[in-house]
Image (cartoon, rainbow, N blue to C red):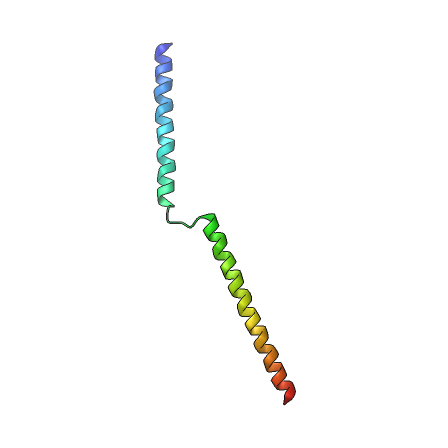
Length: 71
């Protein structure tokens, strides 16, 4: 009985160590990836930038239309 518990204890220690090693390896490999917050902030900046570009384009189209109407 004691031997069985000892074997189970050693096996669980090996398994938990392997799991921790896999998690640490995954974390180290993906350490350079941006976090979800950084990704969301990048998308937000892109949306604002696209919106500003569209607003400038609409403004230019309106100016061109006014010039064409005056001619």
